[in-house]
Amino acid sequence: MLQTPDYAAMLRTAIVQARQGLAEGGIPIGAALYHRDGHMLGCGHNRRVQEDDPSIHGETDAFRKAGRQRSYRDTIMVTTLAPCWYCSGLVRQFNIGTVVVGESVNFAGGLDWLRESGVTVIDLHDSECIELLGDWIAAHPALWNEDIGVD
Ligand SMILES: [Zn+2]
Image (cartoon, rainbow, N blue to C red; front, side, top):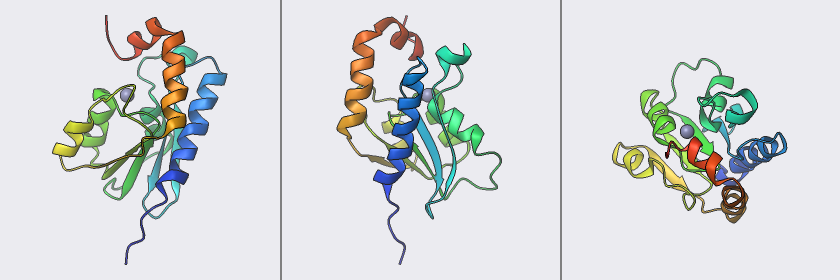
């Protein structure tokens, strides 16, 4: 029998990454790529501000840190926030089987599209994630709009 992975423990890794980004003066969004057997392949966080690079989202950072994988079917992308279109596209491109999000309150991203595409989506509706980013958005509305591509 397949055991359900410990999604809450995986989310902890992403939250630690988000807090590290916040400590660096960046946007507090973190992510980790796991194999469904529970071992972590890579983790990272949004570094738009730190690296002056709009392409480094939590998910893309974790994905790159994980290096080459033969298959992504049995991997789980865990992120503190619902993935944007860009990161949802990454999930589809590489056939990542499962996406676990800390929350989709501050931003719903491409969750419906991922579900319609057959990706298993689990929303943990985690209050720490909601608060961490919600507080940050309230304090940095212009930077937030820049990150999500709103003029
Ligand atoms: Zn993204």
